Amino acid sequence: MIGSYIVKLATKFALKKKKPDRVSPSYQQAKRIGIVFSFENESFHEEVLNLVERIMNDGKSVETLTFIPKKQKNEEYDRPFFTDQDFSTKGKWKSENVMSFKATDFDYLISADLEINKFIRNILASSKAKCRVGHHAEEDEAYFELMINYSGRNTKEYLNQVYHYLTQMKNG
Image (cartoon, rainbow, N blue to C red):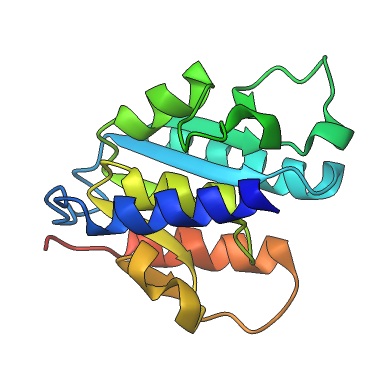
């Protein structure tokens, strides 16, 4: 309970801090793209990896960061991840994966989740990304510069729309 409050409070402070320049480059000019998502199940994970592959095939560098709830933690997971226990009661991240990811100057940072959790909100709020991309929800407007208005529940279709709109991005 108190941990949940601390995450929300830290996120609120991160949103109020001096903002990095959020000027979106065109997709053609973009070099570094980050994708943050929650591990829901294997099929969703595969859909995210398909998106990673599509973006890499366009000549972009892609980094991922996955939220895995402690109860689902898998020691064999071979990509950077964090758990709900990586956020301290003092409102700080203990995970080097998260700290490094937040400090990266991504051209685009994509939230692949249809519903973002409090930990990913915190990462989005304090990210140095030039343009943050995610699913449209009124309560999440402060976290994104580009929101995809998708009303379905099919993550494959949502990620296809993310890719489509991302590739249509022009300067500014």
